[in-house]
Image 1 (cartoon, one colour):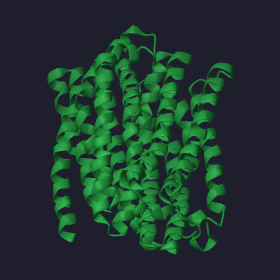
Image 2 (cartoon, one colour):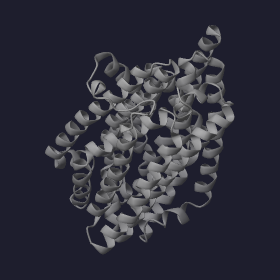
Image 3 (cartoon, one colour):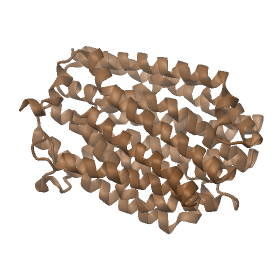
Length: 450
């Protein structure tokens, strides 16, 4: 392999601490820029349209999670499989995975788009839309769904790019897309008066720019993995492998979709449209911090996957421990900021005092368990990175289904609106305890193999 294409080999030889930082920082930067856009986007919608537009935007979260679930199924599964193939020195296998990622994203993207457009209003009402918010939700999701194939390909190829040894380039593409998005969003909302549709249109156009760069990268036959017509066909064992490994993030997003439906409907019952809008504000802000850990995980995934494929288990354990440490520092910092300044943070999104008060109260409650959330997030992604799809899926789904869902159905009966907020830190703590148990079992297995 030429020096130009030697990028994957460093994952098995370089010092773990420096390697994790070099892979994680580009992902963190990309995720942070993307999160900042999401926050700014919500501010534009809340102040450029009207306060209830934020509630309409929040109604779309389950449908967005559903689309993201299928994108993660292919993107995360394919990316992890590429890392493992590279660790095994299987170049053709990695190229074939890339081809399957492309075909699967196109097929699934079209199916999700058609289904969403055909049953739009029924889906949005199920998700908690009212007569006052459904028009905002519909306007946003119609545009997003028409660009769904672009979105799936964009995120799928980004995962492949990162896993094949180009984290810095993946960061630059993400940042470019976000910058385009940030520039177009206020232009479409404030100048062209497109309302919430303008925010959705800016997102699709920005992802199109990023996708064009990704296609150009993988079309270069000098790259270690690239597009080949002979690999652009589905292969049963590769599809099975992608689905198996990508099952964890897929189930996590499907569960998130179900849970947000329950959350929105419970908020509608106990707090009305303003409570749904408050959840949208809190969710956007907390995701800003969670994306730091997600970026760290994306840096960990190819390193852990490569070394697991190369049977260097001591390096697998080391990268996990370092990732947990950094994630915990991030989440403790998030806890401190949100507990100290909730009103100041929430007032950025809206000038409506009622929505600000509801949002600040929710933020203080939801953030309580954040000091332990970092460990849980890293543990779930760690199992995914080493191909333990079932364990990762169990860890991802139990937080939503076993802990959060029952809490959402029970606690509001005792604590009204606050019961909805209490259910979230409760599920975080319980899922962290489960993660500790599952990780101890996996640790023993790796030590036994050594």
